[in-house]
Amino acid sequence: MRTTRKVSVWPVGLVGGRRYERPLVENGKVVGWYTGWRADRPFAIDMAGFAVSLQVILSNPKAVFKRRGSQPGMQESDFLKQITTVEELEPKANNCTKVLIALVRRGSACAY
Image (cartoon, rainbow, N blue to C red; front, top):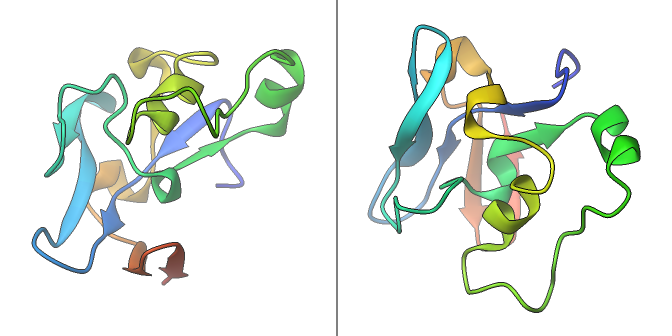
C-alpha cells in the first residue's frame, strides 16, 4: 500500500462459497474481475481490496463515499468512479495473484 501512487488493488480472501475475489490482470493492467457477485460493476471489488493515496483524496475534495444513495454493493464503484478509471488501477500482490488479506467475518479483515 505504501507504494500506491493513485489507487492500488489486490485480491481478497473470503469465507463462504467463493474462496477469493480479485482483479484480473494482463500485462500489468486490470482487465476484469473474478467475483461471485455482479461482475458488471465498474469496479467489482470489496472495500478491503483497494487503497487510495492521500494525494488523490486531497486532489478530489468533492469525491465522497456515499453511505446512502448508492445501490446495494455499489458503494466502492460509486466512490472509485469519482477518482480513477480501471485503466489507471495499480495491481499489487504479484499482479493480483496472491491473497494477502481475508475477510474473516462480515465487517472485519485479517492481513497476512
